[in-house]
Figure (cartoon, one colour):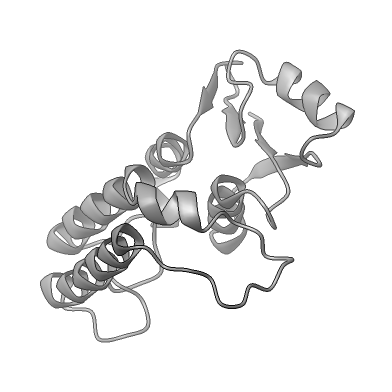
Length: 162
């Protein structure tokens, strides 16, 4: 059984970085194929992972291809339950799922104003009221997660997880 993931450059693609970190941290038996964003090679990589044509994309052993980082993480968690991708405790797992969903789909102002580029340094970035509201929401969510899950360590919901 072979699992294969198409990833973009982790310095620019937060979606690729998320799945890349997950695969690396949990030593999942997945083959990662990388493409340099905006290159012809990247376009060929995307074509090979049709119909997704986005990164990340996961090809299952059956040949089915799924896209979207959260869907991929969920699928890997269901196929490798022994890896412990989600917290073991029911409450911590529920909190982690709620956080993952909101982080995956929310915070539009922050995403628009602060695109991912780990190879650049920014100074004096103007922060709109909408971005400030997103940041306040993230801080509130993280505080709630630590309290609700009983986490006192470095991770929001106990052990390192999705």
